[in-house]
Image (cartoon, rainbow, N blue to C red):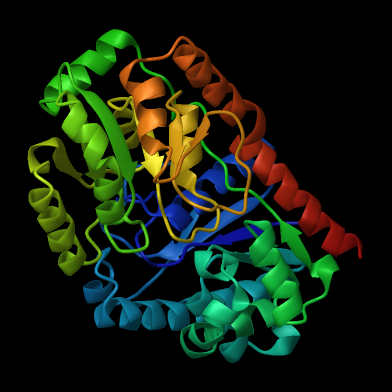
Length: 398
């Protein structure tokens, strides 16, 4: 049973920017290879693909659509359609040649929607079609998102209804898919995201010192937020929540990194810091590629912070844990990640930061050690890939 992992077309694999779904496709593929599981990535064509040894089949698109864009505007949407149409015809050719039933694993609504519309049902039956829902909006109460789903995510609804298997990254998403789309419970599987525990690791004290020098942060304590700069990720909210701690600790810095999805929101963030008188302690570090660059980024931090209003299963949290860096969680996630997570709200965040981060309480090192152990024991990509395989094989045997 061969597995085809379908790249979304957002950016080429391996990802040049910290794109979550592209990282998932890449790491799942690596895990399958280590398990001697036949696998191939189907991905957008790219002249400047990062060097790799992955089995990748390219889908050609005009050069104007090959560049990764973080603005998510009209060009982005057109690119998704162009790539998805070309992808459908590529998958059609693959299915015609396949003699045994394979798995087509989709991660994007555009990709699977156009596949179901442009490839005949007869050909589609030659494969198990699987769809992983990475959309955090599905974890919100249905009455809050019903209209948005029907208007903006009708393609995703169609994709999940047509899939043989659907994977949900948290219990509330699973519940909404089953109840609101009336998809049978035995077709919807709960799955976690994973982390490359060899790549995302704790660096030595000397390496950390050199990295802090690189970013002019030597001798400073750093709370780091990783993620696209937009309202959902909540960098401006974090600045407000950290205001007291930053004012009381001039050695403390809030650093954030990620693509600027909304320039308007980024301007609001900077204005917020300026109005609170803490702009000198709020630092934008730019964008970073997954893997070694991100590992170095996490290692400049004393803790990371996560404050998204909604999320499927946050890769940034388990990447941080894998680097031995605790996460201050200021969000109502419907998944329990485990050791290394420090839960906080507007009433307790000062206590968490002062007690654990600033004063380095007696158990800080233990928290860091347990964070790393949690990632290794529960979130390795090999473990996650095994769970995907169990679901795929269950469908075959059924």
